[in-house]
Image (cartoon, rainbow, N blue to C red; front, side, top):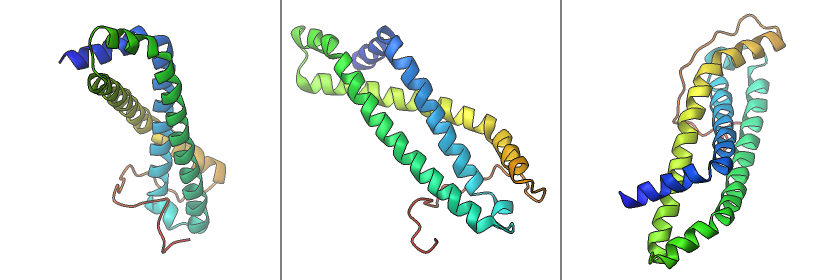
Length: 162
């Protein structure tokens, strides 16, 4: 329990660094969710240019996932450098390297969970809006909105499709 309290206290004390990070990663989670949802829509799959549109969305989704992972790794590295003073203080107070790793891991998990929850809430709320925007941009009335998502498929790495 002490580790969780220390991790949350560290996030709260460095909120000027963590809050923009959480907002940015939440937007990335929401964008990935929206694209994945549009990719899974049956009316887009069955439309006249469905295969081309799905290929474009798959490419966009893979690119966005790659950018998201690179962004999260880079910002995590920057955040870890900014909290070295705090971890040094914990080390002086008697924490071992194992204890510091536990605190850092809890902090990372908390950041990702908070970002994922906020991102999913944003994604679910803006999903219909983005679908209607796509429908309007392509001027195709046959698209039907559906919020069913099949989480079993792997959009970036399907070998049989292309």
